Length: 111
Image (cartoon, rainbow, N blue to C red):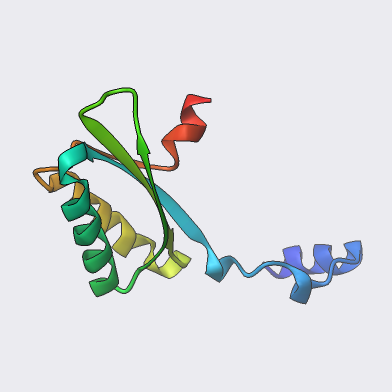
């Protein structure tokens, strides 16, 4: 890391002006039946909050299938909390009403 800092100084980059990586966020896409979406959203927000993670944004989209909906969830997750986020994602995958959990945004993957 010290070599990288030296490189930045020699390149004239102000380290204080660089974005803080501790403010990193992760995105999850959760697919579930449309009629279960309200309960799933409450479950996600309450479980993530209890684990110390902050849901900063949730976008719900109707997919091509009329029976399913997908929620793209942006979570504020510093690097030291990554293992907690992974644990929460595994718990979501085990939820009976959730059919799929994917890291990232499925809209970007499709385009």
